Image 1: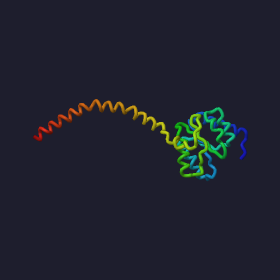
Image 2: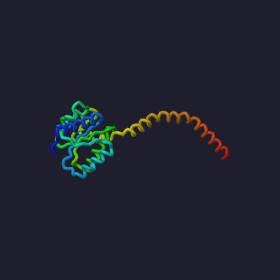
Image 3: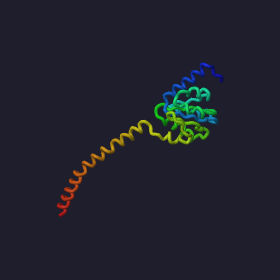
Image 4: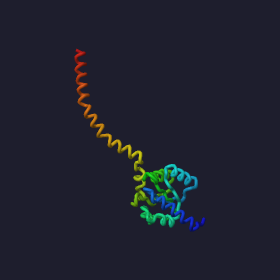
Amino acid sequence: MRLTLEAKKAIVSEVAEVAANAPSAIAAEYSGINVSDMTELRQTARDAGVYMRVVRNTLARRALENTRFECMREGMVGPLLLAFSHEEPGSAAKVIRDFARKNDKLVVKVIALDGRLLQPSDLEALASLPGRDEAISMLMGVMKAPVAKFVRTLAEPHAKLVRTIAAIRDQKQAA
C-alpha cells in the first residue's frame, strides 16, 4: 500500500516522539513470521508496555534523527520491527527474548540503550535487568542489612546472659 506524504510525516513524528522518551530500543528482523504469531507478539508487547511498530527503514532512520537512538541508523537493513521500552529499560528486551525463544524467525539486529549501541548478543543481559520494583526491593534489602545486623549485635549480650542464667537454673534444678 502506498503511503501519502502526510501519512509518512505522521509515522515519522509518532516514532520520533516515542523514541525521545524511551530508555531502550530494539530492531529485529521478522521475515517468515506468520500473522497469528505476529499478533501474539504485538499483544504481549502491549501488555508489557512496549511500543512496537513495523516501519519502513527510510522512515525509521528519519524518525531516529536527533534522538539518542541515532546510533541505530546504520544497522537498519531489511524488514525490521522497532520495539521501544516505555519505563523499564529491559521490558522490550524481555518481550523480544521470550518470543524469539519460541520462534527462531525473529532475529535481533540492533539494540540501543540510552544512546549506546549494543551487540545483538547483549539481548539476554538487557532482558535480565531488574524492573523498577525489583531494583527498589534490592536497594531496600541492602539498606536494611546493616541496621538489622547492628540490632542483632546489640541484643546478643543480653541474650547470652539470659541463656547463661537459664543454663545455671537448669543445672541447679537437675542437681
